[in-house]
Length: 397
Image (cartoon, rainbow, N blue to C red; front, side, top):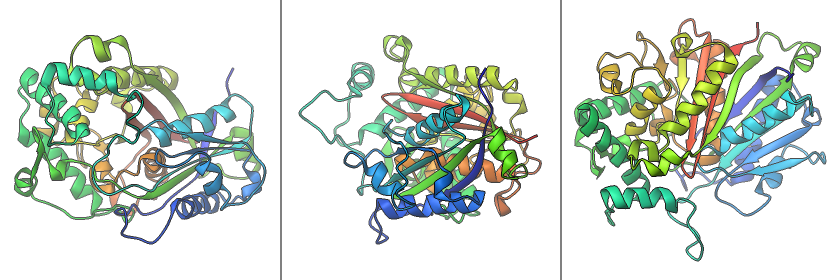
């Protein structure tokens, strides 16, 4: 039988526009890692294994960043799983503890990104998302003047509009909410509030997506420390420990490609499968969730994810938005941090920043963005190519 695993310390940097600050990825890792250690009241010698995630960089950047905290000789695993890299590192660190291999581990993630939209780095080999791209091109074509990622998620939004009558305004309302939430987050790359009209009138990127509905490229880091129940109790950390009630990673199914659906191609079935596993593991369902950090790389994906996580019924995402069910005073608060759209999206750090936000929420330490009475938290982190990691948390009982 697997052991319980607890998050006992979290830390992150402020997310920054690439090139706006004079720092490098070791600085990002150090700042996030030091904050997580200080949060837990631990020293680097307490960490027995580390999983370190990043997408852009040479081999063993994980070691170089972790060495900023100390060169202790422990195993360090470099993780790259596209936009779900940070939560994949967290999943690994949790399994080391859960499986009895370690008592205390660290997950770290960072990204030093280039300005502008993501592109293909290696053109002399098979593109890892060629199967996904093929679905889009065959079903919707390709617009050479628009970046690929907004096309993929924008086309999923168009499909949602065609199937369910969803409107461009409903997608824009999601971005309105997330920008509004970010005003209260000192870690957020952007903290500007916009009117719905400003979001709708921003330059169009693709389909229903305007610029203010797309996440930016970002620099930043995040870290979380995971420990066993024995470690928590022996170090007197019960008051701040957050239990990982359930966690699962799913990768693509045949339906991702065979059903010729853009919604499925960008990961709805992957998310749905991971979420169902987590609900089974935790013994709690979506109706029990108080606060969610989910992967809103684009507003279209946030709406699709409401449905994949069963926060609302399939096709009812637009009505869910119109009812204000996903913000303060509604059914559940989604992306109180501002989400990727406003907080930013340094690929390797995003999943760990989500973890940090939810731990602060459950510990009652989220200041002006605190969700009243938050007891159960849900995290969703998605990487095309593909992998979705879903996690449920509760403060230690």
